[in-house]
Length: 286
Image (cartoon, rainbow, N blue to C red):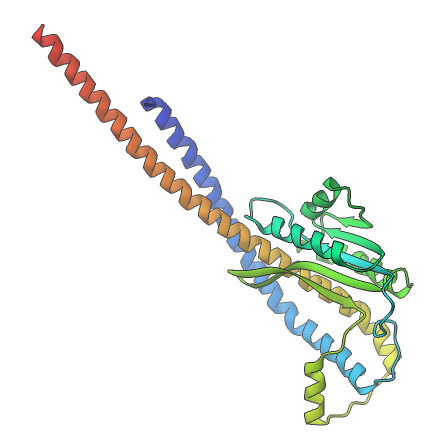
């Protein structure tokens, strides 16, 4: 049986760990709240941009633009948005496994992989997967400075014909308890059947000023940039949600361990007292 000193040291160590996990839980909860607020702020804007793109495509079926025309996919750009740190349960593992499987199953012969976040960058580097570009510090805090050049790089790849398709792999945040990795095609823009059905029933007409060509020149870079921004924010919210859940479980488990150690401490102390009483009694009888 362990000594009283050893048990007390274990209790002290677990209590310190419990304080750390509790603090991380509080930090993750606060960051999750900010991320959800950012999602709500960007959702309506992205939805309106998507509605504008679909309106132009629906009203002008013969309108040709590189962002609307499907190509033979010889080269594909795969953007993976992952986590910044660990201690978030299986969040990074699930995303990395899904991303690697999706990339391997894609039929394109040439694949340009862009990794956002420290964890996916390290994951692909350890497996000797070539990376076209990396953005380890692109997160919610650096959206204003690093998102513009990153989105411009992707848009230039597609418009110049160096890649025929742009896919985005990230963790879709639905709620604090619901999140899962997804793969979404960003470019070329696919038609929305829901909007098409709505158009067939309402029979609305649109007038474009300026021309659709000029509108697309202005809309598409913003469209791509805001889709990437929403995905980064959702990925961050999913990561903080997973970390909050993991730290909650760790804090609760630490409390259980402390209770078990306290029981061991009481048993050891009682056994020590009993042994001392027995020694006193045996000494008095001699």
